[in-house]
Length: 355
Image 1 (cartoon, rainbow, N blue to C red):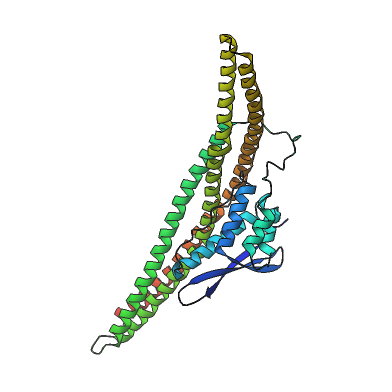
Image 2: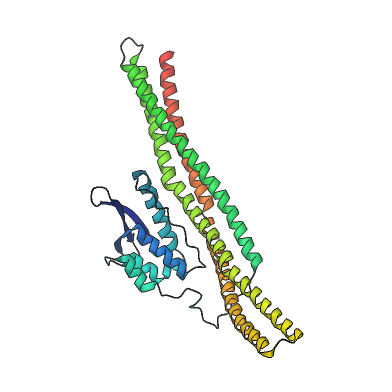
């Protein structure tokens, strides 16, 4: 099935004299519908997804910053990336929770989501007891985490360098624009030699400015946005590994330690001739703890199984990296060729005038 194409558009809204908030118009091609959502609706969905699918990659939401116009577009892009990643997930993308978020038109959407899904069992709890799970492999978890974190660091560096290149292009465009304005002023001044020369050069510098600005915008909006999506996915994988390691894996280890301590207490009681009632009480606790360990062990095994699945999914996203770099290279080539032609034309025209 083709992935859902989801777009998020900003719909500014003002209430009162000072309070300002924004709504987002979300369009889903799959469901052929458009809904309005606020940032806090996304927060509610994010929280419910973490509860129901704690062992899946759930990307971070863009931060809730001050409502500055310069930040609104960045947040819109972030929310759109977030929804696209979530909707394309093989498990989460088919969850009724996400479907409700994309289609529900009730006025109190957050309350409606909580009412429908806050009591839902998580993915593991819905798993049948007869389903066999692979044995725990802490080594594979550590290897997956290390591999993806290395890629996260490297892709982040690539994006930073690509961002810097876009900033340089933007700066060059502004510089050429300013030089063009100065040359027009010189050309319009009286008493200067060959006004046409300055005017024609001003046109050429203006063309360079336009090419630089267009290239910077395209690189920021298209190429660097693809880098950002990769970073969102890899960060979600890193967060997942931390969540599993500090959560269920840690809980399982603590439960095992407690069971071993109870076993030691019971054995010491038997050796020392402690009252039978006391030994029996410890044994009952040990039996109960064995059940806890078994359940946590099965949950831990499921979480590690999910991490390996999510690692494979992250690797699928990483396959786009060569294409992203090729797009970056192509854009550099196109803008450089255009600027070379402009500079060449300026040189040829001005050289003819001096001969």
